[in-house]
Length: 174
Image 1 (cartoon, rainbow, N blue to C red):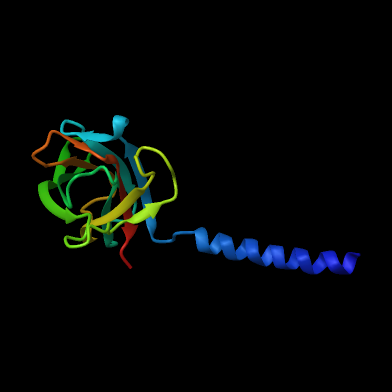
Image 2 (image 1 turned 135 degrees about the horizontal axis):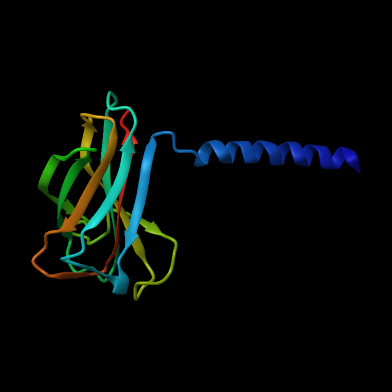
């Protein structure tokens, strides 16, 4: 009986070790999300994220995530974002109100570019898409310390139906 159990535990141990390496994300420095109530992003809702940079000599990628349902009526989204250094004596704006246009759906087919989440809810179809959108590639920070990333939509409509959340990710670029 012992001979049959031993290979099982060896296989299980190897599987657990492999899964732990697969789930680790060595590039990620920080990642957070904000969900909006009632399945829409109001124009006056500023998504603000704080994070710390320990090594300003490295290059980083700055990414935002837009989470939407099929209820979102447009193929793209305009966002404005700012990056602010939160210094002890004063704040320093690194990026100020930069406007970016991102395509969320293919123009011809309407197929979403983002990855479909497996969760249900917040949508008539149950489909929720998560779009990683690159804001800045290989950005270097001037100082060690705390930074804030502020994101808001810049669409003509005041409240964006179908946008259920916004997130950000800071990762090592190399």
